[in-house]
Image 1 (cartoon, rainbow, N blue to C red):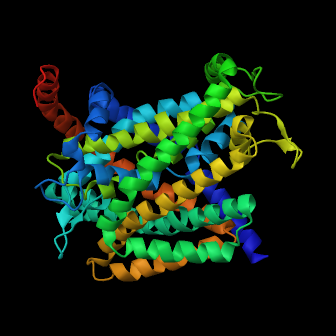
Image 2: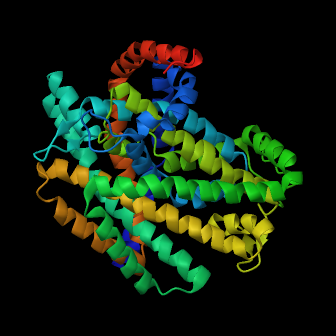
Image 3: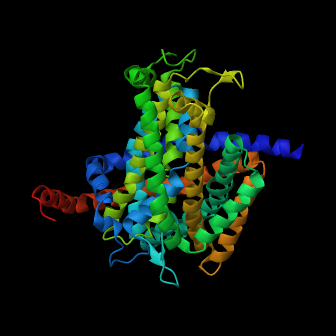
Length: 478
């Protein structure tokens, strides 16, 4: 009785904190930053993407930092690219129609500026711990930036709130829910026993995270590009296999994104949705997917051997591009041109949704192997999320403890919770995690809005160097 009542309370709180106000605050912060930066984040996106493939970005260099700029990006992407790219997109399109994909793109475009700002500030205001390791993220930005402004108490309070909820989120959305997704998908697809899979996940996670950021970054820099390329290639195969549906699928996406009244399409079965539905679910799932404005990626960005805070901000900003504008787009186009959206799932008697919708879409080309493709994707995406979130949660824990001496305790607890998540029902954990995510984002968004002028000034100042670099590139000079 008590557990049922608690679940209802958590569901109500979750609905409130992730209601229209929070979503508009997340999107609105991105809009404010984009305008104040004079759209430089949009203008410099091609340059930033090109820079991520450069040798200079992949090398650690002589600057202060723990890992190379590329490794910092892939570790942040490890935590960001997760099951939301597979299940979240399908959920948005099933609830809000295919037009939700357009609103995911819109939220990502403004999310570029949020991601740029939080990562740039994290590098600028980072500090070293007693071992000489970099410590940064929104909590350090709030503490150090507002201390310099004579408001140390305000900054410390905001930073403490962010760090506390970041630790809670790391245990929930960054750990137990991910391991649960892995064992559930492997059990459904291949009949693997949850307890044995959970034990393997726990041991593997512990062995990797025991080495800290360098070990996590080393794995992430290999796993993240591989899993993204694997998923994108498989998705492109499905899109090519349904190429005859692609023009009408794209048309349906844009039509249903802006239709004021409920509308459907030839590839939607009996499904109808309005622009309001598309906007609501598209913005929500887009933000959940790329985590722009949440502040989590900034913790990893602070570990980079950055030449300049603005430069690293641009590098980490591309994470939103890869996550939403590439990986989520592949999922969305696969579903839109597959013809399964709005169709009835024979096993449930209801319309396809979530992972089942994505599996059905991939199965139109891969047949029964479609389930295996999605299962592999979920396993890789979810496990990388565990690794990325461990580092982010650890740094937040270190901030609260005031020292790194207890980090191994955190790593042990985190590893044990991987097994707990793999073997237990997690309805309450999902609710707590969602609430912690929202409460983590709130102080970060306040910080970004209050420091938007500083962000804009830094971006404007560094633009001179970017323009010079672009000119040298056109001239064929290094």
